[in-house]
View 1 (tube, rainbow, N blue to C red):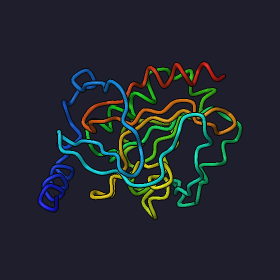
View 2 (cartoon, rainbow, N blue to C red):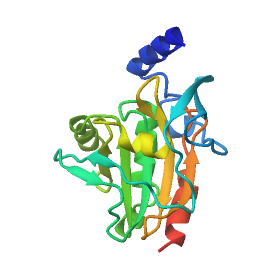
View 3 (cartoon, rainbow, N blue to C red):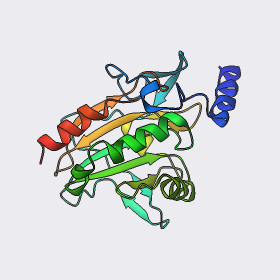
Length: 205
């Protein structure tokens, strides 16, 4: 396991572990979902890696977690402001698949962003998230970082412990912070089904 983790970390740093192609249409969209939480796994290039934490469940309240905003202030995930939210979870923005996923969130149905809160969560530092958003010209997505204590990953069963990265996932919550849609991508090199997540979010308005 140690040798595998070392190899995967090297691939992450090279940007290869999350890339199936440089263009969105070259990256496969995942079919189905794996379960989050302790005892479950996701795969990176076919290599299974364990998930840690308490699993988030559809029909239950999204667990609270304290994340860090771009101004370095704390943000509580339990505070919904009465809005439907699409929460896009990515391992690292500086990789092609995460880049594509975040652009999809921002660009697939931009009018939805007027009524639905778009959130991207990763382990990237807030400074790196801000840099990516500026370079990508993304203005309708709120970026939050789980870098401090991985509380979002642990409280939702989405922490890839050996890499201390978040699993790729999409969560949709309603105005009362109840989880209405969840996809945890089984193979991290693939994209989530953003169309399905947006359709669910729009049905909750």
